[in-house]
Image (cartoon, rainbow over all chains, first blue to last red; front, side, top):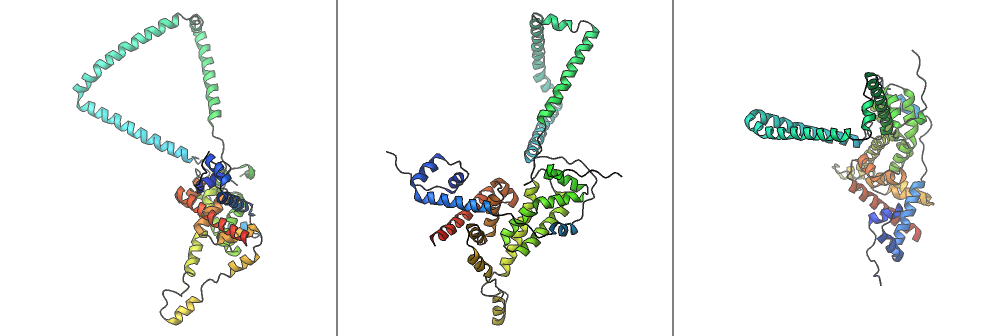
Amino acid sequence: MLMPDTQHLTADELDLLLVGTPAPRATLHIETCDSCRTMSRLDREVVGSLARLPMLEPSEGFADRVMRQVIVSSRAPQVVATRTPREVAARRRLFAGSLLGGGMVTAGFAWAAANQTEALAWVTPGLRSFGQSLWISLQTVSANASEQPWFSTVSSAFATPSRVLLTAAAVGAIYVAGLIGFRQILTEPATDAGL
Amino acid sequence: MAELAAPDWRGLTDQEVVQHALVGREAAYRELISRYQRPVFSLIFRMVRDRELAEDLTQETFVKVLNAIDSYRPEYKFSSWIFKIANNAAIDHLRRRQLDTLSLDGSPHAESSEAVEATTLQIGDGRETQLDEVTSRELGQQIAVAMGKLRPEYRSCILLRHVEGRAYEEIAEMLDLPLGTVKTYIHRARHELRLMLAEVRES
């Protein structure tokens, strides 16, 4: 048999009850606790009454009275960047990251300049090994590609200068269409702070 | 120079209307007034509970906001900005009034018994509250009266939350308060209103 839950609902749990997303414990508790049930009912009444309070209006001519004291801006039209707090935070993070990265690279160069022999001793074997790996990779990729069934079709697209031009134009058109498409997708919808 | 056609104001966001105001369009200023005069006046009235005073404070709020429109930062909601200024105006007034009617024993600066007596007579007499209580027959009115008894900070938080429907985070930003404090104020305000409502029900 389940023990009755004797701990009354917290303010946060009452909050969740109000917005209709109660925690399972709250739902169970309220079935057995008169005090919390009453509190929740009163809460709903209070909040309901507040939400129903009528909007009030200032007296007639309010806008004119305000405008008599307002100096209308005469600033020249200009584009003002609209950034959300998230964008501002992201820009700050990006700036801090760039600063850190840039600092590390600069420090690395400064150290290498001051210790050229040691730096070369570290870098030369690595560069040699990287160059060899790159060359082997390129050979493997080209050998694999030339054995593919589509290779002859693709190579024929570059067989003559006119075909090269045609292919370049087609690729360019696809690239521009892609850019326009992305721009449409990524454009932020306008947000309204109005009531 | 050809006059630019008037835009369809209703279709514009607040930020866009502000952009029009910034280039000197008076109609844009009027549009902002028209959008916010009711919510701002309602908020201030429910804070100070005096129509004439609420109108003065609302006017003061709009004059302050519209004259400082150049300093509006579009990454924030215009509504948050104007409510913040309106709330500050109301709170400042309530604090000043509290100072005016602070002591039931006369001014602390009074140097003679006559001076003490004279300043004691200047205390707010709560007639408005009594009158409100007599005339408050419906729940909404009772709630409004009970709101007047809350601390001003509780009052602004609960009005913004449950009348204006603002999120806790937005209220915290508007009132420059930590989120936890905003939640506590709202919970306490609701608790006091619940008690009042329970009393009314019992009587």
